[in-house]
Length: 141
Image: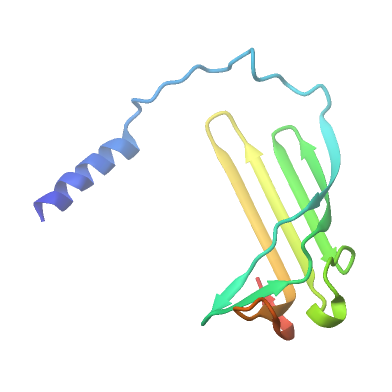
């Protein structure tokens, strides 16, 4: 009981104290962009795997094209994977549809990252790496 009280006091002091100071801006490292809006294209490789009772469910879409927009300190990325870059055999591994939305906002003292991912269509792998089955209606939000 006594240890909990001591840890609570230390945690409260750490969270609510203003004892950390840093330099405002490192002019040798940080510089403002000359453009107000920036558009970018990319190919993302993020994907999700589900493990349940020794079975791994994997989407068949390791690469997905995306578009990004940057306005001042806010970056919005959208990535769609609809059978464009399925690297594995679609008949053997099935088809996967994916949607990924990321919003990043950077302030001087605060960072906000929001992410949303949706996948539909998985295949399962057995422990010997062979395909266990195709699950076209299995989805993850």
